[in-house]
Image 1: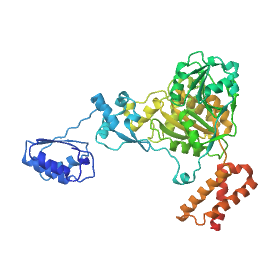
Image 2: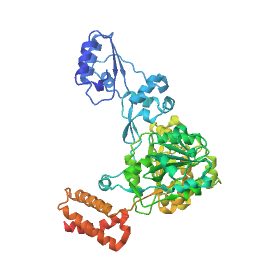
Image 3: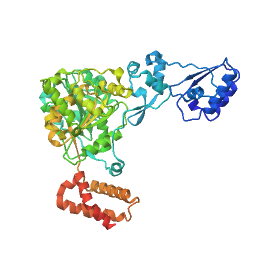
Image 4: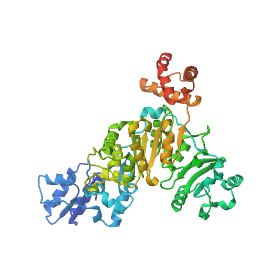
Length: 536
């Protein structure tokens, strides 16, 4: 019986009745507990003193409260201590699987089964050492990774969901002569066949997924399992360009492009990109984010790119990825170190990129906290870490990294020193390999084209605040600010909308359309905050 799981008095009665009479062996699995074990140990000690033939076995760690209490009892009985280390490989395959299934860990702030983090028994045997195995058996709390920093309580109170402009493709792309060989269009939606026929596509060129063949140019699929089917098509046509498009309300929306190794997006396709003033809600756009491994958001300063990253990372509750946000402007020293390494070894970034077959992490000088720095420096490390010397948390991180199961949010690509741009881009391209890692990047618009070309994808932008957005944001902002400062709800809230309307009209006359930039809306709000306090 496990003492920590027993109800008050239950285990004492069991010991008195069974071990005190007929049973000669009592096995105790002693999990660390805040329960008082003195009464329990007193009963055991009395039984052992009376019956020398009886034995107890206590299974626990060096801090076992039951063992400690018995060793210090007034009337002691003989005891032996055996130190044993059980390795994960010592267990049967079924026991290994059961332990993984039944072990719940705190992974980046969320509860997760160890099976969600470790994909096989082979990996588990490398990652779980005897100390960690004991913690798992004893039911001790295991924490892996810090939670990703999302909104503060204040930010969450007044955050207003944004809208995004999707990337539309003109159907004239189907007529491009250079896109008729080794170019496949994987199209998802309803009435796709009718749409293609209307645009002059021959029926012989169109197949559904189940009947697709090497000579077809258009593969039609439904929404169910479209990601798996797209992956299968890419795998079967490794030397073809494959464009995943979605037909939505008679409009072709670009979703993803598979580009063959060492190739890039062709201008024949790129020139048919359209970005009209049609936006979708954040919740709708997030479905695109979940499916795409590479997401680039570019816009002008103050549009809320960093805030959107926080919103997405908060929404994504997925234990199959280790999430890291890397604010690039905070890693100038690390980037300088990478630059010096390249100069010292008399090589170029291009040479370094070609020579690295697989990124490796160097834990030699790791402080146990900054995984972002560890990832950046993988560009100049070519030795595999000695996993046996790492902590369990670091072994799990290394496992996620080598298995390309990372979600890396690179915030502020435009804010790094231009001298380090090539190094960061080389790292991004290596992390993008096989498109298993997920990479989100934010930047101002001056790097939009370069990021698109290097990463073979297209960037999204945000809709400026319209008047309704501004009113909602300002209302949330002021009500929350008042409550934080005063400790109660704002009185006369019906007057607030009138004041906001007047403020927005005045601001529009003074600064024009830039009031639609969220940061400008906030700055203008702070300017008038004193007037609001006076008004109320």
